[in-house]
Image (cartoon, rainbow, N blue to C red):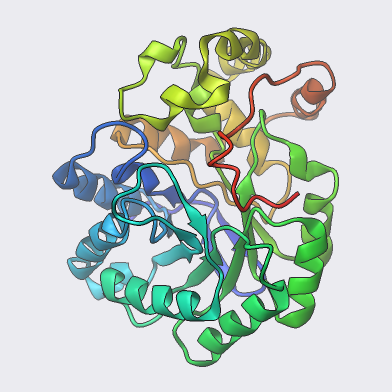
Amino acid sequence: MKILPQRKLGKTLNVSAIGYGAMGLSEFYGPTDDEASLALLHNVIDNGVTLIDTADMYGRGHNEQLIGTFLKKLPPSEREKLNIATKCGIDRSSHQGYERNINNSPEYIKKCCDESLARLGIEQIDLYYIHRIQQEIPIEETMQVLADLVRAGKIARIGLCEISPTLLKRAHATFPVDVVQTEYSLWTRDIEDALLPLLKEYNIGLVPYSPLGRGFLTGKYQSNQDFAENDFRRSNPRFQDESIRKNKLLLEAIHPMAVKHSCSYGQIALAWLLAQWQSIVPIPGTKREKYLLENINSCFISLDEDELNTLNELKTHIVIHGNRYSNEGMKGIIK
């Protein structure tokens, strides 16, 4: 197994500096192939990644089942190095498409945890997130349920996704939060004003999802027609042709650095993210070994102070066009 730089999330979770987001192996990003996905997962761990991120709603359980199949075939020496993170809180019935309901009821969380353990074929989840926050339920009540799962040995650590600073303070006062997962990249930087400073103050790890802007920051996508019919980006506001055209200013700013470092646009975007704080572990996802290796090797790209300052200042003069989700996708995202 390749050795990657290690980082600590919270007080006890030591993982590779780059994790892997497995969502696309089941849905949302075009066609899927379980056999190819299992082969890719082996490449993930062979190249030193020790954090795999999934959720019960990805493929309505399929993603967890796929990872469970993968885990069963691993030798104990490899399995013990791997940390599995999964989530609950987005309820998608079998007959719905992209539609979802947010459910943080105690009964639902407990049921989902047991079902995730069964699909993954493990006795304890290394990191268990509430995927989206249901505002009607006090966050203190949700944290008490998660604390009970920790005490029962079903989960090792608690994570919260897309949470506001105010709610995070209340949650952390109830029971320690280990990790926050939220969207963070060169084109989504909302958390820098209040949430990121709070995470640093509390020593709560940060796991940015979509760190490559759902692929936009790779420079690969030039038109809305580049996406398959069943790719959710086809209807995403930021990937409409007019938004793509305007948002290319961001890629133009990255281009000189990619040339200088002889690397891809995406590697610059990940190197920038890694440089923001030592307790950040991005989880880019891909279905191709080529891009997996690109993402991993971003750990070894060092941007100098001038380059970081240039990228940090982009938000002051480049306006990102298009909401990051449709209205349905924004359910449960707390500002």
